[in-house]
Image (cartoon, rainbow, N blue to C red; front, side):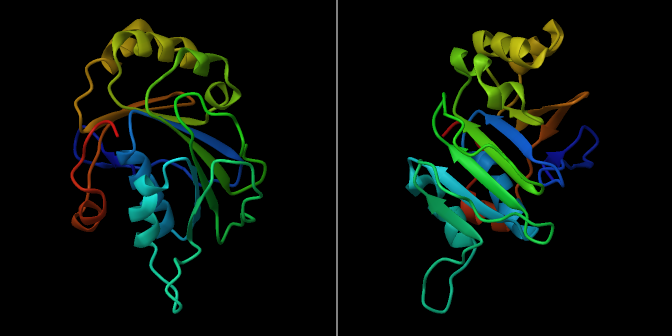
Length: 205
């Protein structure tokens, strides 16, 4: 569940699928961390490759601890350098979160069924337009963008001018979900347990 629709109905997205999948989030850490928590709740293994591990510690702690006090392997924080991720299966799908700044290298392309790589972008940089991960993204989640970034999003994901303009007017608690034949405004919804971990809904890092 990503959030709620115009009538308050739950809006879902197939983040973990039987195909290798790429996701992009643009606009900050909040809803990227929310997706990580919800993926873990479904039994997924979440591996976070980041240069700012402190920003993800709350997600790691949410997975719990083993008897020896070490974090449960369901959530792992790793350095932002190449490594072999765990094997993804239908019973334990894999979400690799690449939190590597505005112009990340594609270090962890999804290569097997039930593996999703999610790229967390703080904003939309012009160089992203020529990147494989953005052009090949199966699902894109966008918070409000300034006009120049909204126009760039339009060029990357083939958005018509009215949708580009809409991207500049999204409330802080709303995102736009973009996918294959999909354009959906979604209001972020945080339950009490999530809010204890992440705090209130916000835009930016």
